[in-house]
Length: 229
Image 1 (cartoon, rainbow, N blue to C red):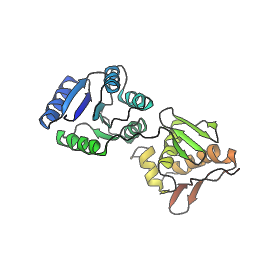
Image 2: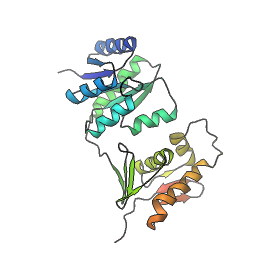
Image 3: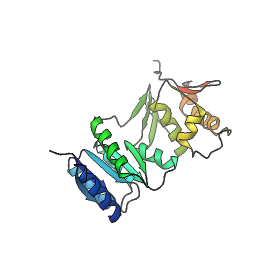
Image 4: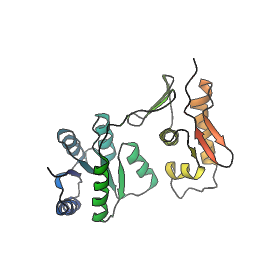
């Protein structure tokens, strides 16, 4: 059986172009034209990969992807969008997408990325990120520490998720800026330091912890420690 791909795209012209290109490369292609249809087809049929436009009627691509992951559908997803800002890229990855391609794009690049995703396969991934007794659910957008809910703003959540995807690693201020803020943000700003302080007041201090470390001249690190007792 050939490789089967679902393209979820509301632009008839774009969907036709992508479908024709992928078929020429040997893919079997189905097309859905809105979010609800794309979500239904993704769950009802076994696809090797999904090409998902971010801006869709009914449900946008971010919500479609979030609901897929919540339903434990781990088919590889590559998101397409005309908006190429860091915020949208992060939103797509937070929703559970595996890759991201900004419009306009070369059809040959889409094909290459699909081949790479399909080779990687779709192993089941944990919905909740864990670092010691700190748990973060990217789908539900929730955080708990030692079972206690922790209320975070959207930006605090984005910064914490970056740390929890790379526990024990030293993350530079520039890296954090690039992932959680627009690239145009002034790198000389102390906004990262401010948000680290906000996070410490919410995830560390109330629990008598000191896991979010500052390494002078290097950056910050989230220690993957486990609560005592």
